[in-house]
Image 1 (cartoon, rainbow, N blue to C red):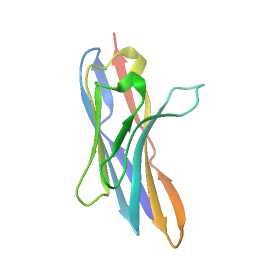
Image 2 (image 1 turned 60 degrees about the vertical axis):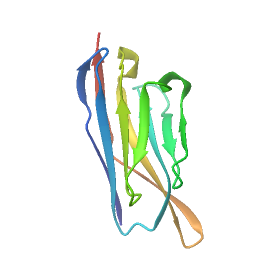
Image 3 (image 1 turned 45 degrees about the vertical axis):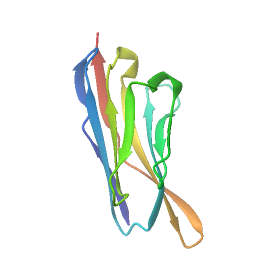
Image 4 (image 1 turned 90 degrees about the horizontal axis):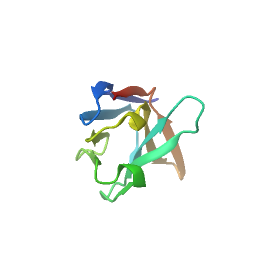
Length: 119
């Protein structure tokens, strides 16, 4: 059983910052890529940023230069530093952990954390 828990969401004014955290625990095996997604009601979940086990990162165009993804040395925690937030960043943010086990890939999701940016 693998658990993924996000934290760090909240309400912030435009121009402010938040730092999201995500921790994977339980019987997790080799973690490959960890990702942050976000979703607004009525819209599809969209990829915000990702980081591989080697530390290679990738960002959606609309967060480049504002958001930074990082992970801990153990590879079971991932963070998203969000700066210069604007109201369009308001969404539920989800953490995704990709694991390689027994010859197959498994994806685990957290419950999401709400980020609200006021104008």
